Figure (cartoon, protein in one colour):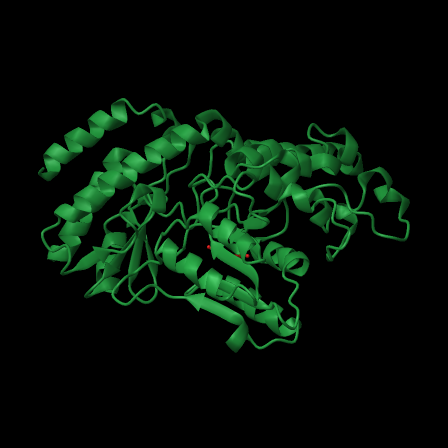
Length: 423
Ligand SMILES: *Cc1c(COP(=O)(O)O)cnc(C)c1O
C-alpha cells in the first residue's frame, strides 16, 4: 500500500470508528500553529476539555463556602476519595472497596511494600524484570536495605534470553519456581515502560503464590491501556499513576489496589495516617489506629481535591467510551501502526520493533529500537510535528491511544518517520 492509499484507508476507518467523537473532547497541542500528531499518551495524557470545569467548580466552592465545603460543596471534600472508586475499579477489574486514589505512584509503592514485603532470614528475595523504571528500582533497593538485606543477593532481575528483547513467560515462571524457598515478593510492571511488553498477570501471580510469595504489579503503563483483572487474577496489590493513560495532568493523584482477602488480616503492618482511620471516629482524634475497611485504610492524608477533580473529569470519559471499546480500537490502531512500520524499506536496518507482536502481550505502545542515528531521527520527528518520546539509550516510543488518536495519526507518523529516515 502506498501512503496515499494508506491515508484513504485510515480515513475510512476513522469514519466508522465508534469512538471518533472523543478526539474533540481533548485539547490537542499545536506545533508551528498546526495540530501535532500526539503519540505520548503513555507519558503525559492529553487534557480533557472538561478538566477546567471540574477544577473551577472546586475553586468556586472553596471561594463561596470556605471550610464548609468539606461537607456542603457539590462534591463534599470529606468524601472525595469515594468518587473515583467505581470507575477505577472497572478500569483495573476490581471491587470498588479494593481501590483508592491517593498520593503518588512511588509513595504508594512504598506503602504497599511496607505491608507486603516482609522479608525473613530465609524468605527475602524480590523477583522483578531487569531494567525496571528507575523509581521502582530505587524503591526496591531502599526497601531491601531498610530491612537489613543486601540488594546484590536479594533483588533478582530477570533478563530476556540472548538475542531477544522481551521476557518469555515460561522463563519468568521458571525463575519464580527456582527461587521458591527464598522469594518473598514477585513484582513486575503491568506493561514494561521501555519495551511495551504486557506481562502475563494471571500466570505470574499464580506461580508467585505457588512459590509462597506475595505478588504485586506496577500498572503505570497498564492502567487505562490494557485489561488487568486484578481481582480475578488474585493479584495481592498494585499501584499506578494517573497522568499517563488516565489523562489526569502532570503530577496527578495516583492509585492503589489491595485484594480483599487481605482486608481482615490484623497482622499486616502498615504506615498509618488519619485518612486511613475509621471514618466514623476520624475526628474524635483518639489514640489507637483503627483502619478503614478496604484499600481506603492505606490512605494517609486528606484528599488533594484539585488533582482528584482532574481525575474525575477523565474517568467520566472512560465511563462514556467503555473500556472494552477502547481496548478494541487500541488493538486496531497498534496493529495498523505495526503493519505500516514493517513496510518501511529499511525496517531491520534502521530500526526494529522490540514490543511483542502478539496483541495479548502489549498495550498500545510500540518501542522502536533505533540501530543508527536514533536521537537524530527522533529530533527530526519532533521538528515535523510528531510528538513521540525518546528513552535512553536507543528507543523511540510511539503510543497511539484510542481516546484521542485516529487511524490517520498512525499513517501520518509512519509517513513522517520514513521521510526522517531517508534524509
Ligand atoms: C511513570 C512511572 C513512574 C513514575 O513515578 P511517580 O511516583 O509517579 O513519579 C514510576 N514507575 C513506573 C513504572 C512508571 O512508568
